[in-house]
Image 1 (cartoon, rainbow, N blue to C red):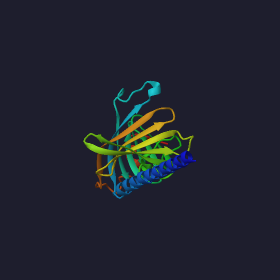
Image 2: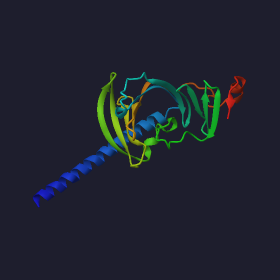
Image 3: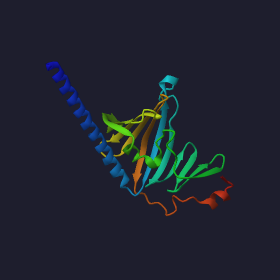
Image 4: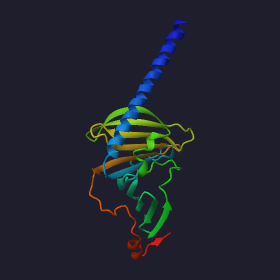
Length: 218
């Protein structure tokens, strides 16, 4: 009986600890979301690396992919992989500068492929994840607190998301996404600016401009 009681107490205390840990993790994410979401707009430059141990691909085998994004609410201008993605809150414009082709669709990029898209960066964690605090690490002269997000859906294409948060600024510094296929995608923010002066038409698609440059619009 004594052993059973001790085991029960041990499990009970462990459950409480995990619960408090989850609350602490979510509280930190809410703080980050509130702070970054309060800016009128944000400019973020980032680098992306990919690794997959099962496929023999190590981080650093290939040079990082670089991109940048301007965010204002759900609207964004994203330069990534040689393309420009412009979302005005209603329509998404994908501008292929090499082929001079533009595709237009209603709504934002879909998350069905398990990828975390720009307009959801500050809110994606609010549904479908359990939380736990990760390690506090020193990275490039800053203290970065990691939070681990585990999908509730066991069939999710995402196995785990690790968000690295600058402990001083409460800004997202790093996002590491592990997929069900073993791939690990790491985004690191290399430059951050807030409340930039943007023109009134910054997030509006200028059809005449691209037609004058002989773009094909679908």
